[in-house]
Image 1: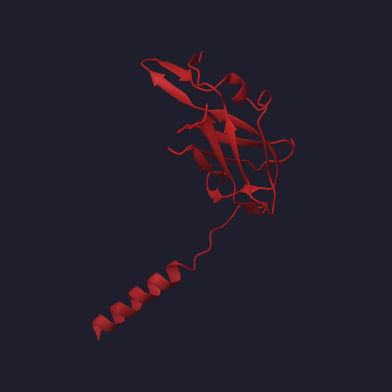
Image 2: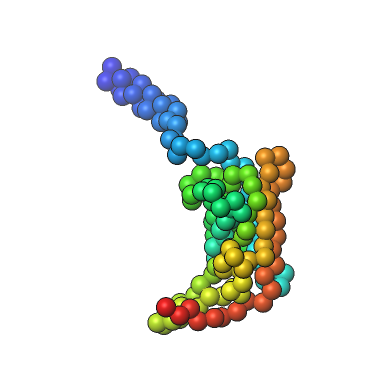
Length: 145
């Protein structure tokens, strides 16, 4: 009898653990799958932090992520929710390297700020939300504090 009761409780635990819904922040808009590929002279670049900055200054929802070995990042909103809200975005890229006591930016500085980045990306509700950005040759600029 004890074995049957334990078995029923374990089954109930497994079934109901999958029914839990995650609370999302108030006002979170619908999110759509989106990915970006970053290349340097045609080769994929791993470890690039990709941040979508909304062109609308009052929009607070951003999407971001870090590229894998294949140079692709699947974007997430607030690092937690898969996908990106719809809209037009500036793409900001950063990739750093530490060498001793120094830190270096490996991507041209024009891509590291939304005011100077010429990279744009639009997420639409229906469509393929993906793009490839070739950033040219990697650099090694010392970051000064």
